[in-house]
Image (cartoon, rainbow, N blue to C red; front, side, top):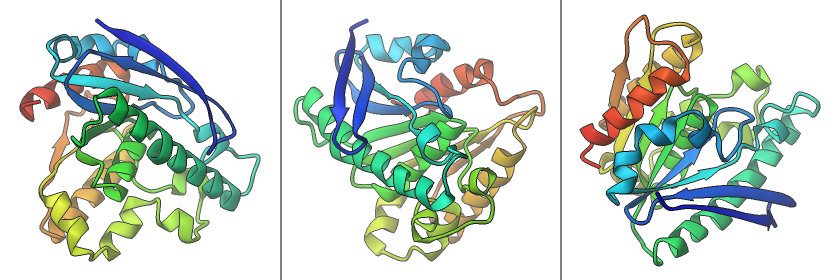
Length: 246
């Protein structure tokens, strides 16, 4: 498997950021890590091995980025408003730096990407997908949350609202966005075992919001033995890639 390591100082974040690229060809898939984790988590946890067939056959090319949650939403040492501002910096890093890098790496492609992640990475996959349907046309969110109260409590401002899919999607009426969502693949996956409680409720709520807007999604509730843990996510991801015909 072709593997590349890249590092640059992000103008948006004011610090060095690293990423890895896996594969030689295929649909770009941007993978967000779990809360506070690294750009090499996908490889370290066996997720890469679980989808190696797709990579080796040139069906997907995977780009894995590092988390910034420890300086934004999960940074308990600063006020929620400041956490939200730091998330906006991460947003600028992903859309203004990583997305152009991916396009160049894939031969200046205008092909849309897959957004993928587990746990907090599942939140980011969903949030970036819904905010940027011109970039992403597939979302695979496994055991994600879709609002931020577990991290910042009851605090809200415009930035928090605009980065909480359960809050901004009910109010979204832009026909261009809605039509792009309707043409996309949206996978909302969650187990019903240990540590999945908040993700279960958020998954159901997100699916309900989308249904009311006439947007098809795949709400996939796994069994009561399916925990919020890597062995299950390693089963989920290849299942979804195969089911979606990727």
